Length: 363
Image (cartoon, rainbow, N blue to C red; front, side):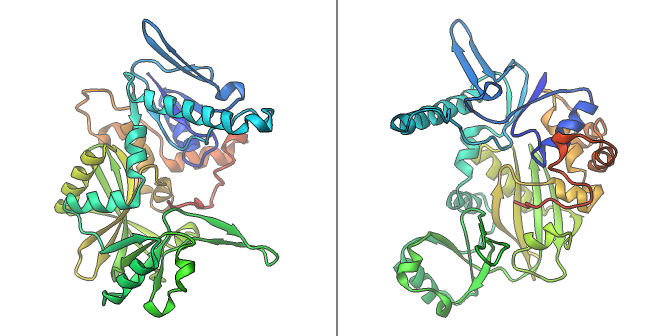
């Protein structure tokens, strides 16, 4: 088998995992996504058998495909303006064909595109988490001023607001950037009705928490990590990116584990990073899942987390194997090994990971 990673080779998770897999003797190739350039072209032949090629790589039975973060389709820029909309639609639809056909072939997909596309919807996540027995904060997702003001008027809890997706703005003239973060908001702080229609938002009861938890799902294995932020910030990601969050390995409560496995079964995902808030009574509240969320920063903060080795074990697990991920994890080098290697080498394709500096994104 070989491992096919759908992402740029210098992605900050692709590089370490590709290296670790190769050190263990696995063949690993990257395909950055559909493009007009030769290495990113694709070909699907449906004849006596179905054959898919991604650039120079043929997808073969038994391969493992990690749908990490492929780039959006890129048509040939020389197409005329009159044809631009047509070619963009053709590239987008062909990309969907490639993404969906993968899960019909005799290969292992982490995650299947249909499951990833489905679960990457905040409302779907909250609804199914509740259905599966996980605690969720009461939430409103809306662009309706009437619905938003009514939610605030009939809610005595402290409330927060957050965006559907991460975003970053460059600050013109004054320099620097602004990023989307979760923040507390009161009824009096709501802007006028028209502004509430500019962008939909997520409004939720605020969980007054002891600490946050980042949980990583790998098949039927669940690994949880308490995130201790000295500033007790509502949104810990900015501090984590600066190395100001301590990562502690903790046990997942049995009811939470049961709910998460039911959630994974219902959504079809086999891998993802999940965020919880733990309140003052020790109850875990589901906040969201990112099916390709970042996890190697946990190893950077606490080498005992071993998410790199476990993920490599999970990705390459032979069908029908009775080994545990913990047993297979010893086949692979650690994230610290990778960083030591990186410090001694001059490898341009690994420049996205800078020794000693934390990952910029904690999604």
